[in-house]
Every structure is written in C-alpha cells, then in structure tokens.
Image 1 (cartoon, rainbow, N blue to C red):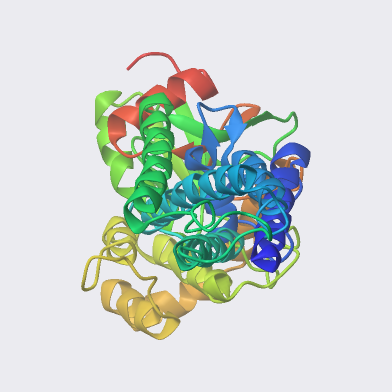
Image 2: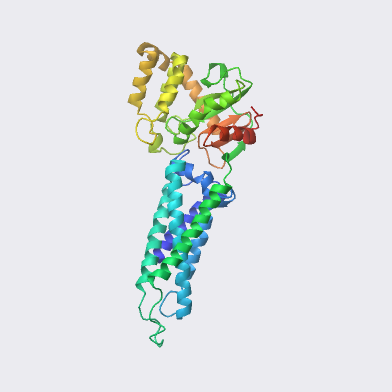
Amino acid sequence: MTGLIIIALVLSVIMSWHYLSGESMAGCGGGSPCEQVLNSRWSVVAGILPVSGMAMGVYLAVLAASLFTGPATDLIVRRMAWSVMLILSGTVAGSAIWLTIVQKWIIGAFCLYCMTAHITGMLLAALIIWRAIRLTNQSGRKGEPPAARAYLFRPIPATGRVLTGVFLAGILAATQVISAPTALSSNIGSQENIPYVDYSAAPVIGPPDAPYVVTLLFDYQCSQCQKIHFMLNEVVQKYDGKLAFVLCPAPLSPQCNPYVPLEVDEFKNSCELAEIGLAVWLANREAFADFENWMFTFETGDKWLPRKPEAVRAKAVELVGREEFDAARSDTWIEKYLQTSVQIYGQTIRDGKGGIPKMVYGSRWVFPESYNPDDLVLLLQKSLGLPLP
C-alpha cells in the first residue's frame, strides 16, 4: 500500500512540476497525446489549480493517515485514520474514472503519465477498501477489552465513507464542467518577426483576399486538428468573406521538423503526408478541398484514424492524375513552403511547448481548444484580437 502511495505521489509531483515550470514531459513530443492532455483545459480546475496538484495533496494525506493504521495505535485514532483513507480512496477512484472518461470521449487522447497515475490510484483505492473490511473482527492493541477491539469497520459504514469520497470527486467533475470557459486556449503567446507566408500561393480555406487571414499550423495525423478542420468553413461563413485560414502543415516529426526533439509513433508519417497534400494543392487547387475533407473524415467506427501513406498517395493520384501528381511532387515549392511552415512552428514555441493545432494572427498565436464553431469564433476574438464577424 505504501509503495502504491509513493508511486502515485511521485507521478503527481512530476505532472505538477510540468505545469509550474512549463517544461515538456520526458517522452512527450510536441503534439503528442500526452501533451494534448496535459495542456488541455481539463488538466486544471477553474483555470488556475492543476488537477495533479490536488492529487498530490490527496496522496500526501493518504500517506500521513497510513502512518496511524498500525496495531500499536489507539483504536480511536486508528479508526479515524482508516476513515480518512476510505474517503480519499473513493475520491481517488471517482476522479480516476472521470478523468479517464475525459481523455477517451472529450479530448480523444490518452496521457501515459496520467493513465499510469489513474491505474495506480485505482489499485490503491481497491487495496485500502479491501484492507479496511478485512480488518473487521481483527484484534487490536494488546490490553484492549474484547468489545473494544471487535471490529474497525463493518462493510456498510466502510461503503458509506467510500461513497462520500466519490461524491467529492463528483464535485471536482462538476466544477471543471461549470468553470471551464466555452472557448479556451491552453496557451497564448506573442512573437515578433514570424516568417511571412505568401497567401496568394498558399492553400487557403476562405477568400484569399480576405482582410483577416489566420495561419493554421496542423498535422494530418493530429486528432485535435481533425476536430478543428470541420469548423473552419462555418467560421469563414460567419465572417461573411472577411476571414480566411491559410493552411500550413507543420509535421510533428524530426524527419522534416528540427524543432521536434523526438520521433513519436503517432506522427512518423507526417512529413510524407504533408508533402502529398501540398502536391495535390499544386496540381489541382479545386481538388484540394476534397482531398482535405477525405483526409479528416471518419473511415469506420466512432474514432477518427489518420490515413496511411499508401492510401493517401492513391487518393491524390485519383483526384489530380498520375502525371500531374508526379510533376507537382517534384516541385521545389513544396520543400520551401514546408520549411516556412516549420519556421513558424519554431518561432511560436514557448517554454518548450510546441503543440498543434496552432493559430497565428499577426504576432500573436494560440492553441485552439474549441468544440464548436461558436467557441472558435470567441477564441479568435478574445485570444487573437479579431473583430466581431
């Protein structure tokens, strides 16, 4: 039990330090599922208090209470210590279930550190409950009368304490839901001298002569990019032709992006997919919208999965023709445009955080975390300074 407490406590300290220092987690590359979760609105309560910090406090309390659970402790103190541990075990279990639901069905990504902490917490909670009930009818401190040491907890009182802890976890979940703003950026930054993009020659969603042009850094293998993609046209419509999004692929792979320190399996094909997408744009701009929609459309089931390079090349040839695709793929413009996109990505890294999707307007940039077009419009206005549509 002590071992599980220490493991969970260490993980909470590591994630809390990540929040306070702004440094990247070991093994979490830019835009990785780990970074998506740890930088999301659900990693904090009321926008200010990190969930990992609260977990650290809970595990410290469990550790302190566990020091008074031995048979040498007075019965009243021992019961109080186990009561605290039972309540906190319910809190730990309820929070682990809630935050796993958030990762699965809201964020759509799993953090290895978080899930390890959740599994450790669930095992710890199960062990505490099992031990508390097992101590029923166990003898206590020597010298106590039999009536006094007959039991610590019966199953029903123990269950009541656990449910009290679950209720506290429910308050945490409700607070997160209520306090989370409708549109939120997990990070906002400003950077002068961001590389210039020639909008007239770049892939654009919306009118290329729009007075407001937002640069969107994305990756064809990024799940949050997939969610944002299908909001863009509706946001453009809300601005009635005054807004356009310039699409700048920023592959999260060190093969073509030197600002990404580690290769992550989720993005190992990102460079090739970006080059194919730009080749489609060069070969046939009218076909590019169909290509983009196909890239981000669900294939089967209820979860979007990135396309494989073989299927993407076949789709590109189908849309623009073999000769046109091959000619566009060998054009030096693709490499130059990709380098410009990557430079923008590098210029907008702050505190080691370089995730995507990322929107850049003028010298300001933001990580959008929006669940509908209205959220995205609000974010563009509050975070990037765009006027009302």
